[in-house]
Image (cartoon, rainbow, N blue to C red; front, top):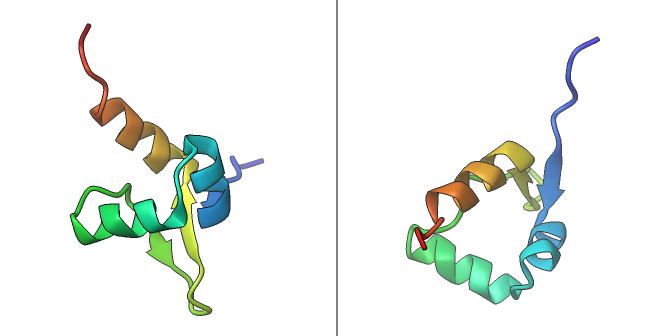
Length: 62
C-alpha cells in the first residue's frame, strides 16, 4: 500500500510553530513561507515534508 501524504491546515501549521496566521501571510508576502497551495475553497495546505524541508533550511549553526 502507498504512503499517504500528510497535509497541514494553516491552523495546524500556526499552532505547531506557535505563530499567528498574520505572521504566515507576512512570510508569504516576503517570499519566506514554506511551499504551500491553496485549495479551490481558498483554504491553505502545507505538506508535512515541505514544512520539514523549510525548517531544515532555516537551521542556524551553533
